Image (cartoon, rainbow over all chains, first blue to last red):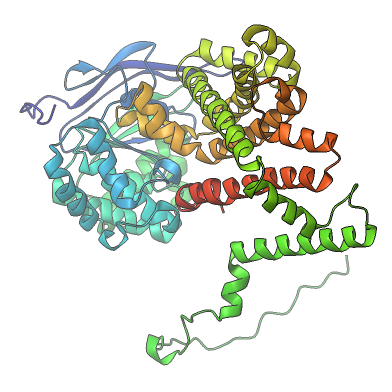
Length: 270
Length: 293
């Protein structure tokens, strides 16, 4: 478990094949997604983009192992996902994902300790290295309630990344942050990715965020979620906002999501 | 509709400024004066409250001037000292505490097992909900005749009713504490691969600690009440009675100051446990973690 076997980069890390997801409320059974397929390769920043109700969060929960598909299968490195596990660390939108009874340091160290994914002797060094990466070394001994929202999310990201999961699952991790902090965090995530080239599956409902964060964007239609398109957004970052490629991709996605015809869009721009 | 638009706001020039260096601003951090510190000290505030209550007691009893009905605080304290040094109060108190701690420990352990079951299985959940709904309203003292029948006259009967009074209160609080643990925190724990007992003690127990501590407090209070009541009813029959029996004895003998001394002992032990054990526990856990003010 400590070291993953070498993988063929031509094989996907995570693959969803015709995944239909349903969840029960007290009164009804809701179909969240219908036959969704996609493949995430090592080093991808794969974004699930769609309006609320398109089942993107359900897909992420399913990849995490919290929700079993009623049809189709989700596989990690060729193995069916059955239950949550430390090979797929998740970063949630909510700030209470950190354990309030543990210091920042302990929060990052805890999953490594309980999973035995790394030798004990390595844990301290890894925690310090990742706290350093997110710039929170000074706050190692502080408890989470003393931190701001952005700092909490940083710790959650460090906690997940320090585990070196096969795929990092992020469920709108910046949605609860203010706009200025969100921008800083997006830049920071890109910087961290340049640093370690992890694989991430990222859920958002913001087209702009999808374009900046993602290298691949899976656009989902709502109720129930179905794949509308898979787009290539590699090479786009903060600097690209306003470039023709950025604008073109943005309007393509808008057209898909709002079902506007290209002509009416052109009129709107004129 | 004679509604006129407000005039345009006046044009104003823009400006930019450079913030001052921190050291030229002056007082940013200041130590509090001793008065501010004292009023912020919870222990100090509590001692003031206790002194006021003690003074009220002394003044009222002096005014009433009836030793049989309401002895003065000073008389009670003298009686307390006398009972502790020359009498049986210390021995009685220790006996009561021993029974109390035994019953409390068994009750808390049983509650822990029940709630752990309810946290992991649906049937355990239903079992706990049903049992607490049935037994929580049942006064422990009402079970005493039955306990006497089953366990005979003696400590096991008292321990049994104490367990009953502690178990449901602690279980109910812990259970509702577990249920209020947020979905995000549960999922976070599960992604670490935690399951079963490790999940309960790694995530649920610390996350529900505010509710658990308040359950433990309530359980402790219930245990005391039940113990004293049980001893008042049949403490005489066991070889040597506890505090409740001490109170009963002295009431029969019309030694009211000693009755008050017994009651005061219960109160003092309650205060000590609350401020030493439970508060210390809270300060080092839920307050430190920012889960409780």
